[in-house]
Image (cartoon, rainbow, N blue to C red):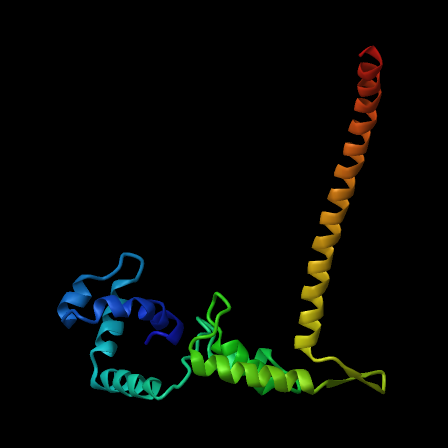
Length: 186
């Protein structure tokens, strides 16, 4: 019998092949998948158990008010990565965002705003060598980082403007003697 990893490889391709009959699906096997593995996979996908499971999954996903957009990461893996005091809020914000960083729908936006306000109002307690100190929430830190980046950009622009001003002063200093010399001739 094949292990689950070898069966999961063609799983992503199944959406393309599910409209075929079992015989057509077996004959239309992708080149990079072994024939015996593909046959086992196709027979599993056409079994009543797999069909019922697909219907059940579609039904359960239809109840989502906010669709999860974690991509290839499943909910369990993402929740293990977020281990903090405010894990629920962070997890919701992480799973409701699309790859581009936008939220999936209006309800997700409203919930995210409320949770973000809640996270900003509460602060975490960081324990360092038996000393507890209040620390700003992560959203405040991110906001401060963004502000620092903005200010750094403005400093760069000011430095560029100072360089241009010095060049203009040098140009004026070069042109001023020639302008006075012309006035003397007239």
